[in-house]
Amino acid sequence: MGGPCVCAGGQCGANINTRCRTGECCSQYGWCGITSGHCGSGCQSSWGTCGGGGGTTSNPPTNTGGSSTVYTGQITYYDDVGTSACGDNLAGDGDYAAISFSLAGQLNTNPMWPPSWCRRQARVTGPRGTAIVRVLDKCSGCGYGDIDVTKSIFQQIIGPLGIGRASVSWQFI
Image 1: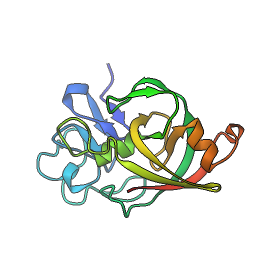
Image 2: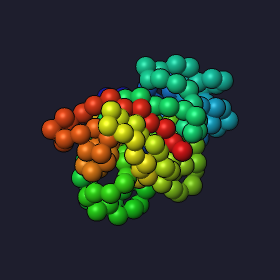
Image 3: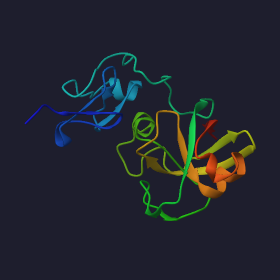
Image 4: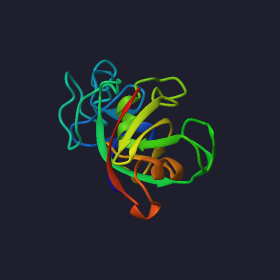
């Protein structure tokens, strides 16, 4: 057997044999990130970097996900049905979105259910306008600042589905 897996943000620790990426801390609750909640008291040094500021990563800003933080990245669409990462039933279309595993892990310092990012509203701005969505899920194919939305939201702020992917900015509100 090889060594532990390296996590691209998200969960970490002995119970899942997974380390955080270089520069990320493994919080006492088993989440990778770079905030003081991840790198401070209870940080799991065997599974990530610990201490003070947490270091740097290849991803952008150290932040708490407050409403003043503006994320930039790619937008894609999905039509998932079933249960979301927040425990909500997804019907295939609506006003919801998914964020990357790495950002969800960074924002979540809450040891209780649901994660602190669940059901927060976000304003997403694209070339054709702005939409308000509820963040209900995590996107496995998304990079740090990317966001995945439903088809109707994508068409509203980007255009035809054939575009597939575009640049946007978004922030929690």
